Length: 547
Figure (tube, one colour):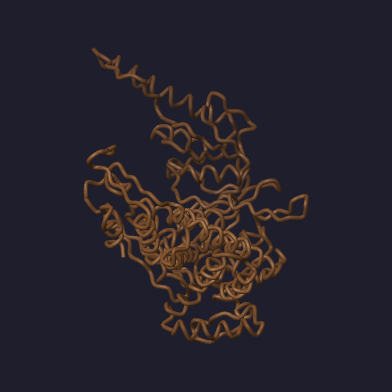
């Protein structure tokens, strides 16, 4: 009996598992070469011809043209890791791919997927428990250790060349927006940190500024550009002639009628400006447009006005100045205004806005670079480092990097496997093997022998050197913590949890039913893969062009 349409495709049982595992592994292998300080970059060219050069895992996966459903599940691992921990996206995806590779070997030994899933769950829980046992507590006031965390996050990215300067700026920024809660914990409000970029200068000239940086010009040359104490109005309404909601034709029969029409528009603009003047505002940051005539009136009143201010800047200025965002000038009140000191840097063509009072705070990281591509990658690296340092301050736990934690976890999981009965024991051992992918890839990307490196690391950990990691620059095994390679425990826990859950989700699928081809992009190509041969990657052809 035929119950499916002619265009429908179905992949069942072992074929479905092999198809899914192959898709997931392809995604993982695509980003493996970017892992670590010696990782390589990817050049991604989108359909519009825009070029992105990066080794940031989540950026690569987001930009790649993936329309395979299983592959997209692995991309979600990277996105979740980025949202929850800020860094470790490549690690999470690589471990997920390796878990599935090892699971495939177990499937070939006729071990049922549910046994593998149970084993992976046990191993994941044990690994996270051991991470907490191994982790070292960090004082949120320990600036030197926080700088090491930031430097470790930036190592291998374009920000590495100036990582000491940038790490100092990042730690200072995080400390300025950290508050202590009633229960003694520390809360980092990253909403109060803004990142602005500027091209044409060296990254070494990046700086941390108190307040906001607005990359805009005054709307009129005669406006003042400096205020020690200004009343600031944040406006989300255009200071322009109001347009009717419907199309209107106006018949004018004489020059007098035309003049009256123009006078009415001028009066309307004058009324809007008078409302701003009556509010007591010295400075207006407008998210919409400002008419030329209104600009003239504002300049005559000595009011500084900036138009087309970005929504993100308006939101940040609200935090800095304590002002409310006004959407209707008719309802403006004195309490809607904020207070700030404002100055203009004519050389960089920037406004610096600094809040006044103890209840307002916020800082801006002004990142500089030679070109747009350099600045974009610098911003990605700094954003990751900000997230990691903030996570460290809030979580209070750190680990030795350089593959040290993965080798130690693998060793402890193998010991734990002896206490696990049934076929789940093999899955726990497979999980341990998958974790050791990280030091192996670190060695491969550094041009070192991965087998020799892993043997040396295992030997060091068997001797009780819990913090023994790989120095990719010398090829030696050393105390990674003392060498300044420090990672946050939260990111590692999240990577292990995300990778195992994604692998289990893929393993649980034994039947794929698609109305058309096995892609999610809606293309008319036939790369989705027939049930027999699975057509390779099923719609991941776009990845080839991205590499």
